[in-house]
Image 1 (cartoon, one colour):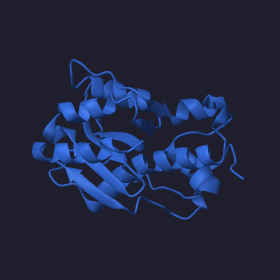
Image 2 (image 1 turned 90 degrees about the vertical axis):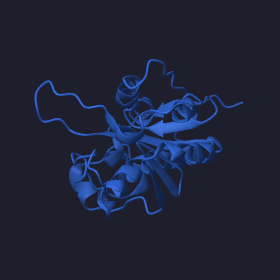
Image 3 (image 1 turned 180 degrees about the vertical axis):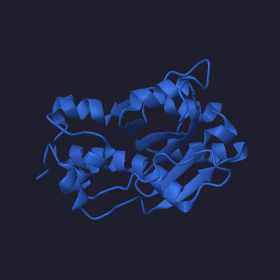
Image 4 (image 1 turned 30 degrees about the horizontal axis):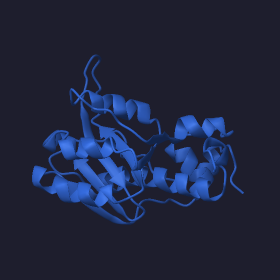
Length: 201
């Protein structure tokens, strides 16, 4: 039985969990095409971004990372190194590839600042949609607790995503959020808890 609410204390009692699959770091333009070719063949991927935190008033940073994940492979694109290349943008505009995220509106707004032309399609926002079916707590950490029965660490959230070399902890954290969104969606869909959001024919 999946609960529709969870407390911080309940989350803290859960076992720590994270993405345990293969991580591909894409930090050169010549790596983009192979990654996109693989992702294009999927039906469902997890989506997230990371931005270097700004601690000064009025300071703005562009998106540093874009993370896309299957059940066992995560691709981390260092946009601060490679920009927002056309193949990657086209992937996010692909209608028959469903991208699952949480609070995707903010992510997409930030990505739109990197290009003159970007029309994202087929994004499913867990935060917005799950409120419609009765979830009282949303956000990746809460949803992982309720649906996946794991606690995910947020200690790397405000780390420097534009460091010359990203640590294993940073990569694992970045991959986990994208992967978790996909897994939460998959479980809820299989349990029939999203049926009211989709037309069944």
